[in-house]
Length: 492
Ligand code: ARG
Image (cartoon, rainbow, N blue to C red; front, side, top):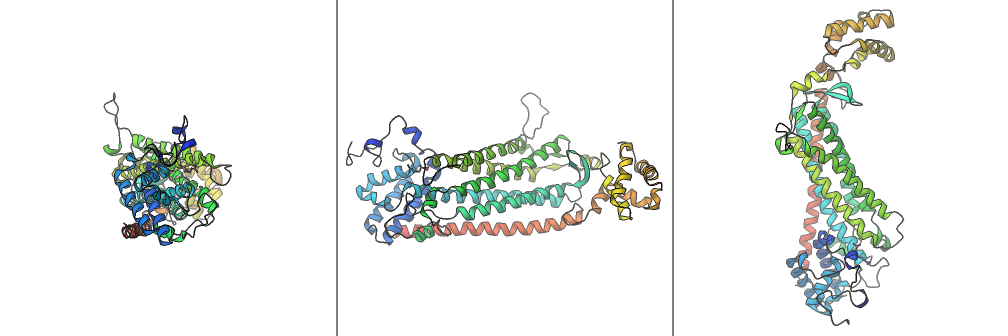
């Protein structure tokens, strides 16, 4: 088949490279559905720039741009066959406009084109993931505001450690999700640079304006080195790494909720639970189990991406085609998990009647007794020794008076002195009460209700600021898209 005899199969790939048994293996056309809109935008910006620079005539530019509107209206499913979306859209343009349509591909390559499309699309996806992370923060902080006094046993090594509150626990995740969102914003800043105009990797003799296409596409600048522009995928690693980090945060949150549900501390709402097909009484935290599992997928995507990129030589290699879907999978899975976690936290019911007695179990107030002795002047290590000597004697059913007597006996044994040489009975009674124990730990970021209340206030402020940053990023993209539409309209 000759150059002029284009078929509806493809008008771009011809002769020797029209397909063969590996055609399906080579093609990314299905996966490229994700960047169909991005490619149209990139085509439009490129054609507008080519016309502005006098590289293509305004008439041809107008015909190409009008055809791109038709291609968009028909949708990805209507594209002619092609090795990828870039080739298929070009084929569609050429079959409509004729050979002049082929001017669209002047001064670029699919290599800089695909790199630009990925970044263009990933921007939106990253902002969506930031949005869900911020919604999760709102759930965590508002739920914390409701539970500054709801006691909760705090664990280390999954053993009762010290009493804390539900709010303090919630804010520990809020802080982590805040950093996750920061990392997503950071990734966004580096993703939002335009590789367009790098061409295959080696630039172009045409007098193009890379800053102009970057501006038309809403990028904050260009990826300057043309070889870096077409081959670099480190920004995907950065984005997927931020997503995987967020997924790991979510997995811890999910695991805690599963454990707390197991102990009857919390119930997930029916919307975030499942039941059993045989055991009618079951209310299972399935959503949290799936959130927990999402970390496995995200880490898998990060590993797949890094492994694909490792040792790739400069400049473009087709391996890169298989790197991209890891980013889409990670952003979809992690964003969905984050959204579900936000809903589950917001609608969960905490059971103070279960958490309050549990908060003091396992002599979890012991550290408070040692702290009281140390505050009275004993070296902390000695105070620790006294309470450690009492600890094995303390039984779950002991009341405050019994525990106090055991600590006093330990003081006699370790120090040769009575406990009352150091502290009052009142002070010991106070620290043995889980609520008082929590209230006493009012150091910055500690669980005392007052300390938590000021953290809630700070968290709300930082959330509002991040929401503004997000809105600003979105407005910038919307303004660029509008400006590009206006430029296109002036040719069509
Ligand atoms: N479909 C390719 C990808 O996703 C882009 C095209 C570049 N292909 C090429 N043979 N140079 O990376």
